[in-house]
Image (tube, rainbow, N blue to C red; front, side, top):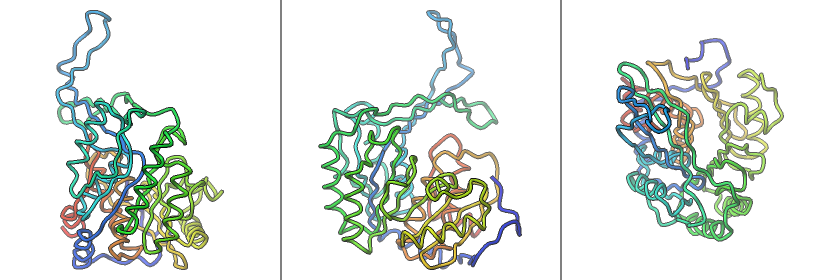
Length: 355
């Protein structure tokens, strides 16, 4: 991932962040109450020492000996983890895990997140805990090498009683929230938390609470979502709008402006090495380029960091341009954290932006 080449694409109305403005915005994070609803996973890392490799006497197959197991919240949980690291006052996960060992580890990992309140997080014997198991080979002076992942997912529809309880939780929480993040990452639509009935509830809450900022991100695309603040990558934006797959930056900016005008909500498009575009209704789109690389990178979880940072920045009163700059800085910090689902703190943002 490299910074955008100066002059290669038009950059509209870019405004430099000052250190005083950064401090003002991040100080407001500590006054905000945010909920995250969606698919929470357990990210379970198996750290493997290749020097301890063996061969199974029974099968003759290689044995990878694990020297450490690390667990952290993933998917919607990683958004929550990033909100906690950024210093949000109250953090409400709204989701579900199984009544199993992975669920125990996920709840334990969520409890470590600053500001978290688990009153609206369910355990169900009818669900398995969504889990990404990530074996990592650690060699001296080399970045960790991830082996084939082992995933646990639900393949049956989410039980109606779970849907009903989560919808009720959102209705109860909405009046006290500054922002709500909706994260859809189930393997198959209908098997996760973001069901049609939950989306209908969110749409009603949006109408009844006009000051509540609601962000949406979906691995399956945002076509079935009501008008909310959409965050998506370029491929998802193309699918949603029917635009060109090879659109250049200027075309993406225009497309973001058109979609924001239609939905009457801000729109954000992440562009990997080209940075990120954002547009508010009735305004010209903004672009923030990616920051230069400072060594090896690991992009796992960077999108969740961007979602968390954009949400808090706008809830704290940032402009679109300021929110984009903070999100790009946070993403740059996270991609340089290897072999983990990383986070960025206000202090780390300050050190990166104002060394």
